[in-house]
Every structure is written in C-alpha cells, then in structure tokens.
View 1: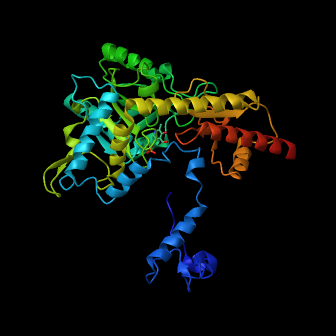
View 2 (view 1 turned 90 degrees about the horizontal axis):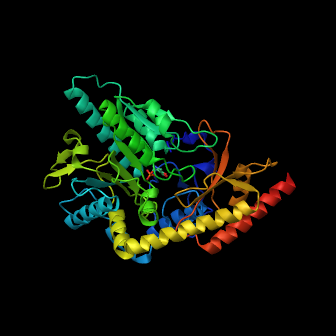
View 3 (view 1 turned 180 degrees about the vertical axis):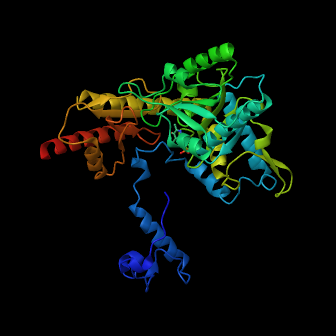
Length: 450
Ligand SMILES: Cc1ncc(COP(=O)(O)O)c(C=O)c1O
C-alpha cells in the first residue's frame, strides 16, 4: 500500500499516540504513532506494545484468502531464525547459502523437466512478481536484440496474456512499457482461449503469458494448446514467440499430483517458469523462483557483474539485498519431505478442497465456478437470487474469524461475484466441517434477517 504522511496537527489526541492508559506498568506518557519517539523504552515494553497491537491482525490459520504459507515445522522455523541475519546477496561471505541456492535451482529445473541438452539457469527471487518481471524483461530484451540485428524497428513491443493473470502482469506491462494485449474472460470462460491468443500475436510479441492455477478460480490456461499454436506460427511465419508460465501456485502442485499434465519445459516454446516458494512450496513469505529453459534465454546485457562484496558475482534480480532464510527454509522442505512428502501433502489438500466443495454444492445454495480446477481452491457463486450478497456472507463469516474474499471477476465476466476459499496444508478435514457449518449458518441467518 502507498501511504500518505499524516498532518499530525489535524489528528485527535488518541490518534496521535498510544495513550498513557495503555499498559501503565510501562508507560507514563503517550508514545507517538506517526513520528519516531524522542526517547528509548525498555525492550520488554517495546515488545509488549508491538505484540499487543498485532493482536488486531487476523489469525493466519483462518486466512483462507491467501495462497501463502502460514505454518512451517518447528525445525524449519529454527533454521529460519538461525539464518535471519544473513543477507542473501553476500555470496562471498555466505558461500554455503549460495551452494544451497545453486542446488535448489537444479532441483527446480529438474522438477519442471528442463531438457538435458539445455543449460537451464535460475534464481531465487522475493516472490513470483519479481520472478515474472525478470522473466518477461529477459524476453523483451531477446526480442529487442533480434529486431536490432534484423534492422527492424523495436519500439512497439507487445505481450499477450489473459485477464486471468495476477496484477503483477499488468504492472510489468506498464512499468516496462510493453503494450498489453489482454484476452478478456467470458461469462463461461475464466481462462485463456487459444483462438483469442492467435488473434493478438504478431512479430512484435515478446511473449505469451500463461497461468498454471489462476488467482481467480484456480484453473489453468490451455498451455499445451498454446504451445502448439506458437509452434505452428514459428513454422509458418518465423516468429519465435516464447511462453512464460506463471506457475506461482500450480508449480508445486502439478508436478506431484498431475505428472502427466504437460505445461512445463517438456513444451518447446516454454522458455521460463516462475513459482512461489512461499505458496505451495510451503515456505513463509517471501520466496519466489525463476527458471529459464536455457541460458540463451537471458541476454548477457541484462546480467550485471558486481565486485563490491569480494569475488565477481553475476546478478539478475531487481532487488540487491534480501533475506536468505526463506531459501534455507525451501532447502529444509525439499530434504525433509522429498517428492513423496510433497505428493502426499498436495493430494491431501486437494482432497480437502474437493470435500468442502462437494458439501457446499450439495446445499444447493452455491454453484461451482471451477469444476475442473488444478489448485485446491473452492470458488463458488450464489446459485439463487438471494436478498443478500456474497460480500455480506463473507463479512458475516469474519465474525467467526474466517477470512475469505468475495470479489467480482474481471471483464467480460464482471457481473459474476465469487467467494474463494484457498485450502492450504494447515486446513484440516475437521476445519472443513466447521467452516461448512459456519457458512450454512451465516447463509440462513442472512436469508431470514433480510
Ligand atoms: C498466479 C499468480 N501469479 C503471481 C502472483 C504474485 O505472486 P507474489 O505474491 O509471490 O509476488 C500470484 C499471487 O497470488 C498468483 O496467484
């Protein structure tokens, strides 16, 4: 969020500072809220004040709006705490962290079926947004370099993706000055359509963006069919248009429970993939991954070499410093769980999502929007024309602590309002039953009161 500097003189006293009636054992004067206090305070007092303030946040375990990990094992938390003081970029100073980073990139490239005859490269990022920006920037530069060598204009790049993308795709287009050619949703289609992609690509298309598990309904774009289309175009017109797969959530689901689904480097035009370690990678925020099919997909002129920290170091990231502890958390999870552990967890959460969806649909109160979803996401709309909205229903559920979003879909499906429940590892079958009871109760309360 972008925040504004407040005009302190216009604030009421209670807004200006924590009043002295708060925790009087510690405080005799108000503590300012919007400027740094003049004096110190004891560590335990500062801890108590901040700790108590944060009680106003929702309970992460009941946050069904987010894909991000809200629980890790104590051993993982211990490793994270032990490594919180390391700056990830200091590779010379923390060489073992960098060795682990390299191993993780290798593990991820193999998970995504990078071909043996390619020299795949990749990096950890702060999240999927940074990974997507870097992936798309590389494709923009590859396109630009090719156009330059062909003596063709390179001032009008475009990118094709669906309205089912996360906001970070629109951000990329605006921040990096690339024309977005967006395929709208329809009332009965919430993912990309191959024929709509075909209408929009041309010789200036730097990339086609596809999603493995959309933020809206958890479905996936027809990636294999789009690959076929781009292969045909390459053969007929000579345009070699890469695909970037945004596998922010699906990248840790599909390889384990849908291994036959072709969406990754098995498809020739798929040149880059991002995935969020902090979603179904089961690590706390912020960790993303970006993997390129081949080092040729990253033009040399956008990789910088710095020597500030000792040895020479190539870097391709937007931010320089970042915490390294989440990378260690990812390594712990891979070693601890192995493929069998990830498969078991992903199967369990998918079963729990199906269980909850089936129960909700049986009530005849709701209609499913994603009967074929890839992600463990329950996305429903009201079946009947009720005297209340899903916004009111989710507000009512908040009274019980459940945090669930209701939102309208993007164009051209904007009149559809949906309620989305993201099922994660710490959402047990028992919690499914409790949530189900609470939804039914809230629904009937609203129906009878309005
Ligand atoms: C499909 C998809 N892409 C990208 C993102 C952005 O990821 P991050 O929050 O890791 O930057 C999200 C986040 O929910 C997502 O669902």
